[in-house]
Length: 492
Image (tube, rainbow, N blue to C red; front, top):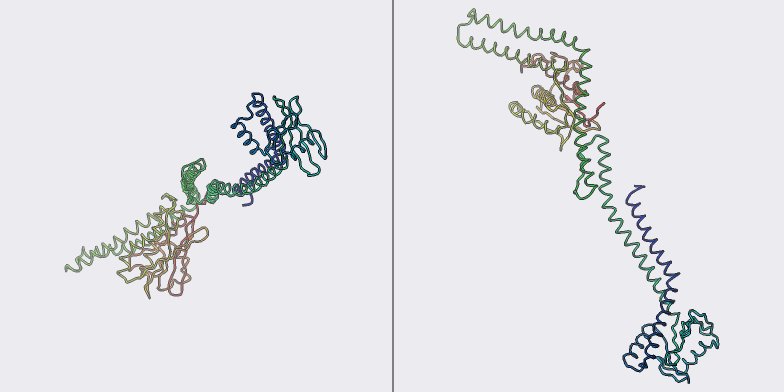
């Protein structure tokens, strides 16, 4: 991402660390040398005061004092000499006393090639910063009079201070570079742990924008981001429920608008078709009932046959009335369509299992093509009715290889379900009319299994209530019926 939070935080923090290291290096370079010289000057004064105090009490010959003085000079790299007024050397920490004495004399009296800068001057001592032009070396020199009248001379090289400062600065530079690199890695890892949940929330909100509510934030419940994720999960569930309710309400509104213009035509068609369908079974019932009454056949078998025909026709009339009532309720909007999100594959497997006995009786093979869950938005019960009608028709009309194939094909916004059966084709001129109430392509075959031409009309009415398509087409060796359902919850 161009404006990644991880990149921004890492850049800012690394810049702060690098700036801090550079500032420390700059301060060391410009001020550490002066601080070091001031510190060395203080050590020279401390050493002078220590020797002066002991000389006042006349205890400069004590062994513990000599050890302490020697340690002080060694640790601070101080060259020291104590001499009497007659130039006799009392104490020195170098081997060639004469040479050191001459050098000290030149420093004190500014003889030879010596350049001096007085840093501090009192009645008792003088501190100077001198430069030996011949050796090109700088020194801090303290010389003064002790309480016992002796003269003390001390010197510390400044070059060693500069060398120490240079080493310290180089070391700081190396450590600073390593610190910046390590800091960058640590900050990147830490910020990734912070921004990864934020990226998950961003992806979750994007999917919610597209009305995809399957995405959930996996919270560990540790901080504010996890709390936000939990709230977004709750919001996702609430939105899914509200959209389901809105889609149902929106669908009902569409049905209410459409049914007002269709209701009159539906009533006329209903009366005409019912009259036509009921005419034949009523005539049969009446004829066989009169035959029983007139005792046309007195034998028990004939009477049983007459009764069986009457019962069979009455059952067909009862089934017809039930289907007509169901169809009428669908077309008039009397049945509420409840849109919900469910797994279509689970419904298909249920219908396939419930029709297994009928297929086994006729030796029909059924194959289901589709894997995994396939969630859709529709009325689950009515979707099951559509599938039952399709598969039942396929069982009754299966011929040839007696093979049925149920295919589930996910598309961009919809899922298409096809039910194919081997057998005879439907005439092209009848393909559009099979959805009409009471229309039968093969009247003899339909009558044979008790059909009344209402099943596909119920399918069409259900799909219209879903505002989705259904259809049929002839294949090379059979017929394929199909319908489509929404994959997304669209409110328009």
